[in-house]
Image (cartoon, rainbow, N blue to C red; front, side, top):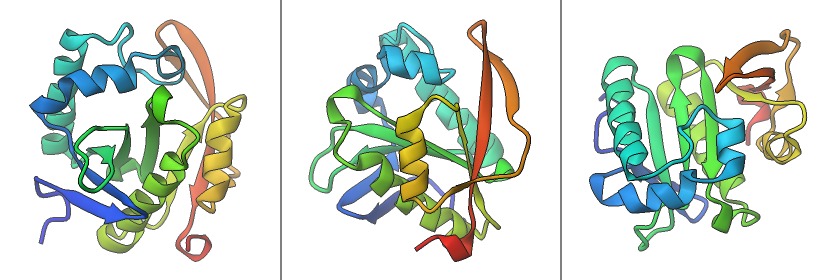
Length: 178
């Protein structure tokens, strides 16, 4: 059984994580067209309908080429994407974005737990990594709630949208995860 077969639905913690669809394009704008998302991610900004179409196509390509997952965070019985979790198994990396209107509801932690459990138990990754800027206190709180600890790895230096970014690596190992 291929754990990355489409369509993929993961449930837990009162959430349903599922593939994004064409019907989600307007909701994707609500989630991703946000200055905080623009600052912290390589996602296009401004994020309009054309950017949503391009991003959905990129999600589908990366799924086909490298089993990379981008799943909408929804509630069972509600179809509206509230955010996104991603898993890049080749790098053991996961991440999350929650739309501004849906923050401070524990969605990133709950969705992070579901995707981490999938990564460790179903996919069989040896650990899960999160890359977080040192000043991103909200994501650091999410990482801690997931059982992550700051790794001993040197910070990663990247440039995104013309901005130099330093990313600390946080690690979740199976013995540290619920």
